[in-house]
Amino acid sequence: MAGVVLKDIRKAYGQVKVIHGIDLEIRQGEFVVFVGPSGCGKSTLLRMIAGLETITGGEMYIDGQLVNEVPPSKRGIAMVFQSYALYPHMTVYDNMAFGMRIAKENKAEIDRRVRSAAEILQLTPYLDRLPKALSGGQRQRVAIGRAICRDPKVFLFDEPLSNLDAALRVATRIEIAKLNESMPDTTMIYVTHDQVEAMTLADRIVVLSAGRIEQVGAPLELYERPHNLFVARFIGSPAMNILPVTITETGEATTVSLGDGKPVRVPIATNASQRGKPASFGVRPEDLSVAAGEDFLFEGRIALVEALGEVTLLYIEGLTEHEPLIAKFPGIWSGRKGDVVRLSASPDKLHLFDEDGHTYRTER
Ligand SMILES: Nc1ncnc2c1ncn2[C@@H]1O[C@H](COP(=O)(O)OP(=O)(O)OP(=O)(O)O)[C@@H](O)[C@H]1O
Image (cartoon, rainbow, N blue to C red; front, side):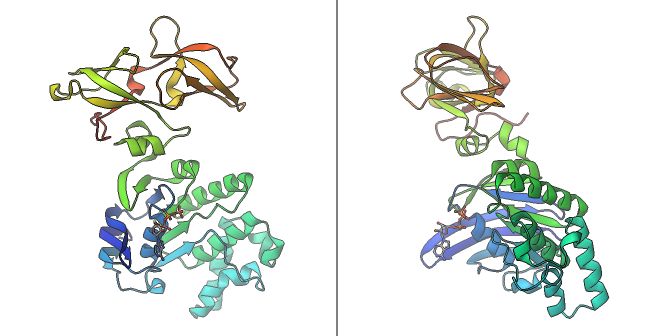
């Protein structure tokens, strides 16, 4: 089974510990995406899987084999980097064939693999070109093609699309999704900063912070049921609105008191020990709507309207001393700066976190 298993994986550069004990099981054929803020250790973790960084502690298994001391070339992996790293003086064909030639693969097999990879990535018309005569997106596809030719058990991607412009990113992202479908047994691990890439490509997302895992789950699971404030804020854009509240009633549902004393009933269970405790109340900008009647969550003044065409973002002040609340409405919305709005949200879209930032929401 060509899965990847990390057991208490640790990394230190001298005295500086950057990965603090990661446990993770990636199944064969799974597409796993690592996300997290800059410096959280995504690339370090990927490079340890690749064998490009030594492992300070713990055990790493690829396909059931302990690989801690196995060199990169013997791990059955292929890695695609942000910079395509193609040989400029070689044609697309030769770039893709290079690794196999070094490995003394026979000519017919090399030709079969190069042509099949070119076909998958729509590179067949460009096989005789030099990299300089290709667009950035095409070059990145050649880099991916070169990796496919190695027939890896595990494909590693380190921000492969970050050098491409917006349109090419989308096109190449779709290529990668198709590639994943066409190689169902190949495990793929992908590092990105881009939420859309993470949400659309991943079977599971691993959210990292400061060298630790915050949560692992399917994209929509992380979006709908973040385990803690960190994940709640990290997944989704603009980020979830978080307001400080006090718990006033507990039970099957919980009543909290917002900053202005307004009671709000949240259909999330809490036990009696939580009464009177401070908590964090969360609601996503896209889950807010204009309240029809007197039944509203918030009332505030619009401080800024950002009309993006497909959506309108409203920044609303006057609710707390904290940052403005953000509401995201579909399409073009007619409200203006200075208007007073009342907002509500469906009760099942409300989130509640305890004073340590953990969710109260239990699995349903
Ligand atoms: N060679 C090194 N020596 C010392 N510290 C290092 C070294 N390489 C990385 N680090 C530190 O390890 C931590 C993790 O770095 P890493 O590059 O894995 O983060 P990242 O999540 O990939 O960040 P980014 O998203 O910015 O690429 C950072 O704090 C970084 O400063």
